[in-house]
Image 1 (cartoon, one colour):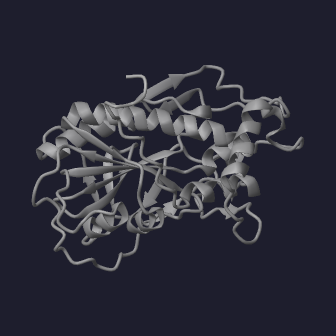
Image 2 (image 1 turned 180 degrees about the horizontal axis):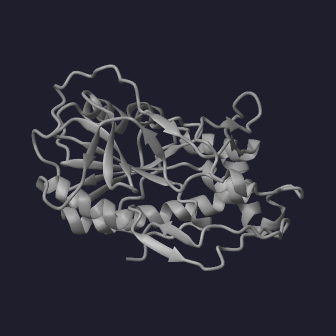
Image 3 (image 1 turned 45 degrees about the vertical axis):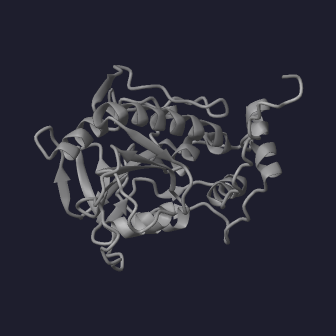
Length: 315
C-alpha cells in the first residue's frame, strides 16, 4: 500500500557534518570503487515499503502545459523535455519484479506495470529533476514529467537572481530559456546507501549528456555552465540543498540581446509550492552528507595551460 504523502523525517545526525577535504573525498570515492562490499554496514536493509516516488511532486502552483503549438522557444522546450525527462516508457513485468540486496535476499513483489523515463537510472530511482528559467517571461518553473507541464516555482525577479548566481553582468544577453538540472541525491541512498555516491554520478552524467544533445537539436545551440553560486541558485528555485543540488545550467539557444533585461527589479521570493514525499524517512550517512557539502563548496579556478610558443626547445 502506498504511504500517505508527507514531509519526511531525516536520518541525519544532529548538526551538519563538515565538508570532506579533497583528500578525504578521494579516499571515500576510491573505497567505493575498490571495495564496494564494504560501502554499507553489515546490517544494511532496504525498506521497500518506504521508497521514494520516481518524480518530485509539487502540490499547488500555477501550471503551463507544454505542446508543439506554443511559441517557438516553448515548442522547442516541449521536444527537449519530453525526449529527455518525460514519463514516456512502460515496462511490463508479469512477475512484478523481484528486488533483493546481497545482505537481504528476500524478494519483494512490485507492480507488474512500471512507468519509466527515456533515460536509464540505477534502480529506477530517477534522482535527476529539471527546472526551466524562461528569460522572456521572467519565470522559474519545475518540469512535471508525469503531466508534461511546467509548475511555476518563482515569478518576477527570477532572471535577476539567476544572473547573480551565474556571475553574469546585469545586461549580458541571455538565451530564450535556461535548463537547470538537479540531483535529489538521497533517492539513490535509499536503496544503495553510500554506494550511491558512485551511482548518483552515473545517473547525473547520463541525464546531462542526453539533455545537452537534445538541446542542441531542439534549439540549435546549448551552452553548459557548471560554475555558479550554488546557494544563490538553490534560493532562486526554492530548493532545499540538504536534499537536492544543482548539477548544471544549460543555456537553450543563442543569447538574444534584450532578453531577460537586468532592469527587472529583484522581488522577494514568494512561497514555493509544497513538495509531497512518499518516503517517511530520508536515509543518510555522515560521510555521504559530507561529500554533498564538499560538492557545493566554492572551487578554485584551475590553472591556465602554458601558452604555446614557437620557440620551445627542440623545435
